[in-house]
Structures are given as structure tokens and as C-alpha cells.
Image 1: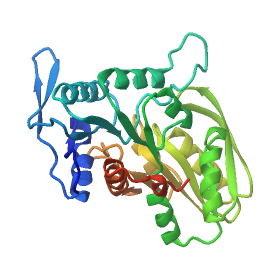
Image 2: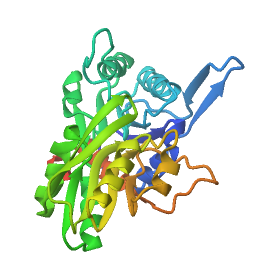
Image 3: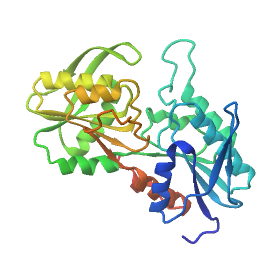
Length: 316
């Protein structure tokens, strides 16, 4: 790459595995950094090489705990104060995205607050994948590159060569995303309708659309406790589906998620590596298939750095 500003890629601790793959795809070494941890739990990241005048990309998915978002903010501040030309936050998974509106009185809009924090730290641009809500892009006054992982998932779905394939949305909120997949793949759409008793607890569920004799792919942006998708899979099988798979970009997989997936009617769960798979050795991951987003991010980083259009990187 010939360019007036050098490119440097750094990683915070929770996304190092992915940052290494992105850097490797670009033919670069990951930038050297360290973290000093004090006895009370306070920590101080440091860039261990010069970034003066460089375009700096910092990779970190902001999964819990809250240290991950704060580490990213400190790294952005460090790069800014070390005279980086531009600092770009590469956030494959954008945490707090479920708090994108006031859905009841007296609650915060967490996603907007995260946007404010990133800008206050000195971030010049954000790259992320499959936001929980598209309008989060509007919470920023800096450019946001919103990447869709569909470019890795669609080829995989086509390779399965399933007869009578149908796409399902696990709830009304996911209908737009599922509809985009069904349109591109040219197959019917099913919508699962659920009533939530409270957060992370699903009440009753039914399906809108033709289920019988179909090989169904449930599409979602994230799987957290896996309550919704496993309940949807069991319900679809009861209604006569031939097989049910689930596909989601962000595998949060908290609480009883692994046990639920293993004991459910799901044949396969297709996810990306925006979040590291945190399965313990005793947990069953045989149904889980991980596809990497590293090439997509490497491609978009290369285009942004070289002032090229990134519109070709979007499927929908």
C-alpha cells in the first residue's frame, strides 16, 4: 500500500484473535500494545510503538463486561494523544445496541451513550457489523461503516443446496432482515410470532407462513440465551418442518445457551466470529459452525484507508 499515512492495526484484549486474522489478511503485523493492571482492577493500555501521523485501526467487540468498551475508549485516547492522524474503532459487535430507544419510561438509550463516548474519546470513524437496529448509525456525527455479514452467510447457505428452503424470522422485529435473505435466495418467508413474558423469557409462539415439508433457516442478528431460536425451532418442527437451522452474526451465547442449543431440534447453528466462542470444555458445540468476518473487515479497512468506495462490500 503506498500512502501518505502509514496504516497500523491494534487490538484490545477481547478481540485479539480476530484482529490477528484481519491484520494477516492485509499482510500486516498487529501493532504492539500492552495493558498494565493495578491491584484494585484499574488498567492502563499502552501503544508500544509510534503512531505519529498514522491511520490507526483499533479492533474490539464491546461484549460484556463493561471493561471492554472502556479499554477501547482508553486505546482511542492513547492513539489520539500520540498524534495519530486518524483513529478508527473497528467494533465487529457493537454492545449496548439493544438499548436503541426508550421502550419504557425512565430507561437510558445506551447505544446513543456509547456513540457519545466514542466521539468524546476522539474516534474519527466506526466500523461495525449487523447492528441490532440500523438507526444507531444516526446516533453518530462521524462516519459509520455498517457491514453486513450476509456476504459470508449467503454463499454458505447456497452450498447447503437444501430443497424447499424457507427463511424464518424469529420475531416481528427480525422480519426485515429475514425478508432480505428470502428475497436474495428466492425462497419463502415465515415469521414466528412470540409474546415475551419479560426480558430473556419467551411466552407463547406461533408461525405465520407455510412450514410443512420445509428446510427452514431462522435468521437473527444475535443469539443471547438462545431461548427464542430454540423455542422457534421446536415449534417449527412440531408444525412439520423437515429441518431447522439458525443463523446469527453475533453469538453472545450467555447463560443456558449452549445447553439449549444442544438439546433443541436445531440441526445446525451458523454464526460468525465477531464474538469469541466462550464455550467451556464440557459444553457441547457440535451443532455450532463458525464463519469468519475477518476478510470482510480487512477488505473494508483496505478500502477506507485507500479512499475507495466500500459500497460493493454491502449485500443489502
